[in-house]
Length: 115
Image (tube, helix red, strand yellow):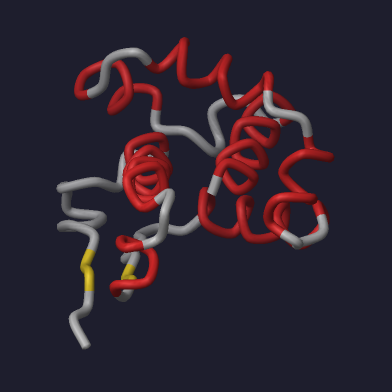
């Protein structure tokens, strides 16, 4: 998830105002600058090594997610029950918040499926 968010942040730096919903971020979030710095400080090599996914694929997904008109994120118990479950869900929510797609007309809420 950090990789996807990093891709979104980098795309926003290249094309200001196109990837992030700054009005939503300013109005409904706190700590965004610290969050952004934490993501910037994470190296792509670390993200690729830990995820097993090439940077190019992560960037493609990140730009797709950020440019979507609306987003629904669904997951099953594995993501939640993973040893990094809290961090996994936190980054999913951070992605939605960054794009202004959390609990708005664009997206009502993330959905977790139960098996």
